[in-house]
Length: 237
View: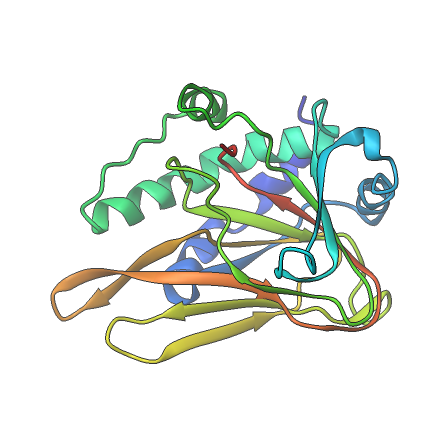
């Protein structure tokens, strides 16, 4: 199952993405979903049978808003995008962990990697559909879920910023070695993806390479509604 999604992933300028990830910890991909595909995925939100759980962000002090974890069978676009994106992100992940002197546990295919997650007790699905309305926001956090972690993930905006919502910028904050935290904000275009750091990433220091801890979140939605699709490449314990 590839549909049009594999071709869109292949069309991404991955050299640029790698460079921006090294510089900033995040990089836009270009379009991964058409407006119609984005609307179809966002339209699944009311159908609770498509999801394994719902999280109220206020209740858990994660911010304001709500998100749901997809249950299998996943939408075709979710399956195809994860399969096409994993081998593109894998060389970056391996390079990062090698710089940090860490083992690189990720095999060549996503299916093999998820098998390792499941063998370690991380069996719960992690594709996420997030829903934000006016005043909603997402606190700074990291999506770890267990001992086995893939260091990159992707969020796709299912709405048109400026038309469907205002506010809702993606926020990334990293603690630089022996320095103040640095923040970046990105307004993700309609149907485009943003690759970003899951936990930490290598930054050059006087002693070589150091791990810079990173957290991400979403700024306050000022008006309208914002749905986003989150693609995490490890399952949850």
